[in-house]
Image (cartoon, rainbow, N blue to C red; front, side, top):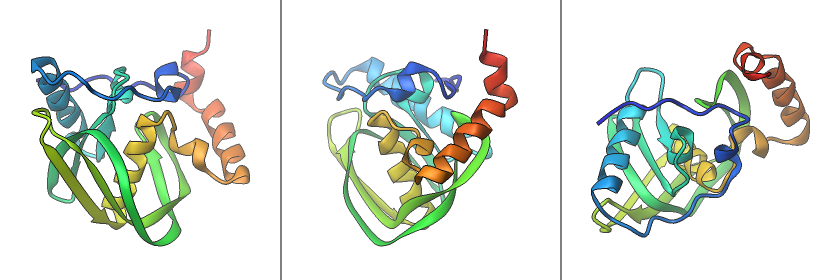
Length: 168
């Protein structure tokens, strides 16, 4: 299929909760492949559907030797310590902030044939699962930061070249 363009902070699709997928057809299979293809380039780990402008609950990933996608994912378990992990986002390019994430996460959903899927991981993989499901709930990671860090992140976003280039 194809690598798709990434939507940047400020695009309303990133702040809107996504609708569950209810139609399992060739269009969904193409979307799943596009999500995986878009997560493959060096420096990427995963891409949620709203990051490519599609408001449905789906994400693709390529991390730690594991590649795939999940439709209608829900975080069903987190564990270990909640600790700050340096985090970035393709929709907030070039900016990284310590973000509270659990050390373990498990996600359940389905594949493009509506068959059950369950994936879990620790450390960076767990961080990715929590990050991507948050996108589907209409949250970009900077919104989840503690107040002072969120203020710092917003200042950095407003001062970034990519954000300034988007202003009229």
